[in-house]
Length: 348
Image (cartoon, rainbow, N blue to C red; front, side, top):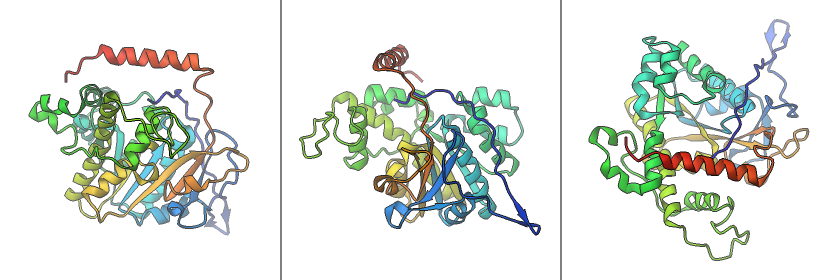
C-alpha cells in the first residue's frame, strides 16, 4: 500500500549562464537543499564507479536506449521536476518519442487521444481519464509537452477496478470479464517465482528486503505466502504485465520509436517488475532505468552499493516528511483504506 501526502510542487527554474554568447551547462548540484532538489548519478547497474552528471549528460546516454523507465516517489516534487527535465532533454536528442504512463489506464486511451488531438478540453479530460489527484502539479507538464510536440501518450496501466478484483479473487476474476473488457489487462500474467516475487512477498509481509515473516536472517526458512498474498501478487503483476504489454504493442506498431515510461519505482527498481516483463516480450530491447533514492545526508548525498545496482542512473532526492507520527496513525489509515476497498464489489 502506498500512503503519501499530497505535495504542492513549487515551480523551479533551471539556471543557465552565458559566456561569450555560448550556452553553458548548468552546474551539477552537490547538495539537496530542499524538496525540489534532485541529483542524477550514473551507476550503470553497479558496473562502473558512480558519477554525478547533469540532466544533459544523462539524456545523452538515455537517448541511446529503446525504453527508458523513470521510477518515481509519486508525490515528490523533486522527482517530478527531474522527470520533466529528463523527458524534455531526451526529446531534444530523440524526437521520435512516446510517453507511457502508469497514471492512465487502458480503458481511457480514447479520452487521452481526444485531449491530445484538441477534441476535448482539460476539465472533461481529467474527469473522463480519471486523472490522479496530483495530476495538475505533477503530470500536467509531461502531458502538455507531449500535446505540444504531437507525441503519443500511452495509457499503459490496467484499470484500478480490475486490479482490485484480481486482488480479491485472483486470476480467476479474468474468466468473469466480458470479451470487450478482457483487453483492459495483459493477455498473459507472469506470476512465477523469482526475485521480484520474493521482493513483493517480503514487502507485503512487512520486511521489504527479506521474507514475508519479518526475519532479518536471509538463511531462515521463509514462511509460505498466504492465499491473500498470492492474490495480491497476481494483482501487482497485472499492473506490471499490462504496462509491459502496452509498451510492447506500441513499439511493434511504431518501429523505430523510443518510449519513456513513468511509473512508481517498485515497478522498475532493480530492472525487475515491468522491466523484466517487457524484456520477456521483446528480448532485444535496450532498456534503461532511472531509479529514485532518498539521500541519508542531503548535504553530502551518495549512492549505496545496493542502490547502484538498482538502475542505470540513480535519482537522489531529499527525504519526504514522515507520513505518520506514530503506528496508531498509520494503523487507522490502513483500516480506513481497507474498509473503503471492501465496500466495493468486484463488478466492472
